[in-house]
Length: 251
View 1 (cartoon, helix red, strand yellow):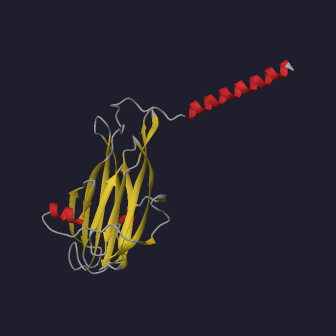
View 2 (spheres, one colour; view 1 turned 45 degrees about the vertical axis):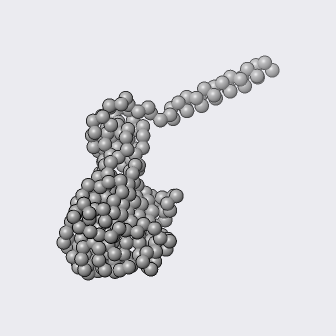
View 3 (tube, helix red, strand yellow; view 1 turned 60 degrees about the vertical axis):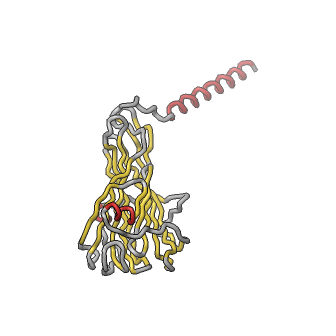
């Protein structure tokens, strides 16, 4: 009897020891000391905004504006910085159609857009009357967010969110959304992006507004230390059926 209890006790001790070893092995690696090249210990910073206006063929570029982004920008705020005027985009309205399987509380994985998919080929085109903003036209807005290392400020990566849309006031007639990342492969594993999008009511049209959210999913890794943290830059873009737009970002 004593032998049997001893065997049971020994088995329990062995099991607890193995579980402890397994748990220790599963622990996330500790980050390298502060100042190690390639560590991200602070939020990202706004990158650039590129607004492109197209000719009636929807392909030929007739003008491009490129400005430094902030955490929150609109067509009106950027126009003021450029010495012109434009209306603000309206960000709110009842949802009329989801354009992917994602939802704000459960974003769906999005395939990173290949270079060819970042073109304007998939959106309907209409003749434009003017630059932002007008009764009809086609524009694109590309917004970026930059992630840098801690002490050295070394570039870790840039997240891109681009929306190309056409409109015939007040209706948006076509939207093409793209997301992708450029990263320093020495410090970052790029796991793609996720997000969601939907049309919403604006100016009496059920497709008068469109919003798209896209977020990057990166692993922060350092040679000999392993992957010890995640980086999630995100950008949200609203567009209206008059050429107005807005963007917010973070992460």
